Length: 90
Image 1 (cartoon, helix red, strand yellow):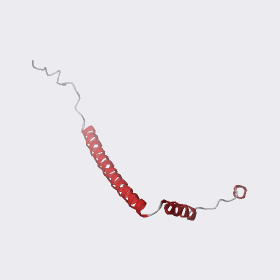
Image 2: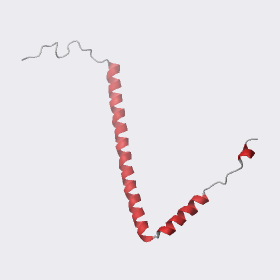
Image 3: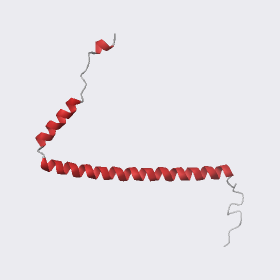
Image 4: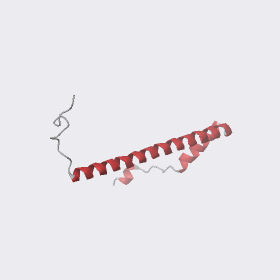
């Protein structure tokens, strides 16, 4: 059975030039955002694998007690001493 011209959308409005530009811009923007997201995910996976490999290598070569001591020293070096709350609110 043949379709009539009415069924194919004769009365469907054609997009204007502004709408087609908008569609092209939207499509390009989504493509760029998608490629950036996939690149970011690939980089995250690569860095995660490198970090896990580094941690596995470090765990084999350094005793656990030494790692804990290094973390404590590193966190205490960057700590800022707390000031009296009343002194700041005069």
